[in-house]
Image 1 (cartoon, rainbow, N blue to C red):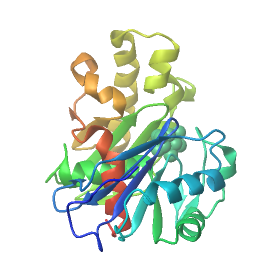
Image 2 (cartoon, rainbow, N blue to C red):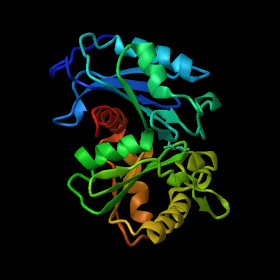
Image 3 (cartoon, protein in one colour):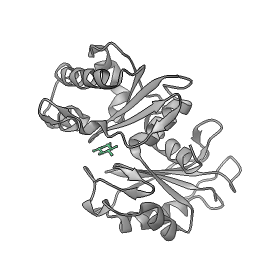
Image 4 (spheres, protein in one colour):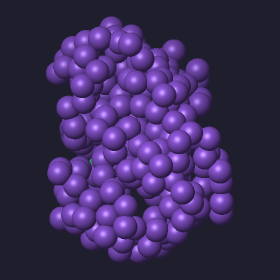
Length: 255
Ligand code: BGC
């Protein structure tokens, strides 16, 4: 695992995207919002408790010798002042962990943790599908859960957790995440019905100017976005699987 960065290594930040199946990291060129060196991916250890994951981060960072900027890390849970506050789809040991302190100690680097959807939202607004957009942009990620980022005039309101709204008497992400489509073997049409109900609920609550739809399934957006019946403009995310890494690096440098 070794890669050579293309921008000034002393100050280049590193983004790490911590997900259920993989942990991806790369130095990020914030001028262009793209990787400054080839990305490194390792499989997420099982169990993926904070202490085990911290060791993986230490090894991953060693793949970028000389890159010394701050490190941003995404976590699929609530993050307040570096402390993880929820673990809907990750090991319960994360709840209450001061992840900023743990990872900073383990890696010897300045590490800042951010909610995964908030990282994607920051990246899409700065470099991607919502670039230059004013007003309220809601970025949602459709994956194992539903992540959300609320960005108003370019400023993030963190930890919106809109995947945990109630939909038809259930936690919305249990009904409308991509994992629900797969688990229940829903057709795109049936899934789009649920998504329409979900996004209509968000419209009533927030009157957004734009929805950005991300997550791995967004590469198939032409199969389901045209089926949504919404009043609000809805577009697919454009940074795809780079959004977490790029957004984490952005967060590490103060957004
Ligand atoms: C978590 C969020 C996360 C989302 C996407 C939800 O279950 O509560 O914090 O952003 O999944 O990973």
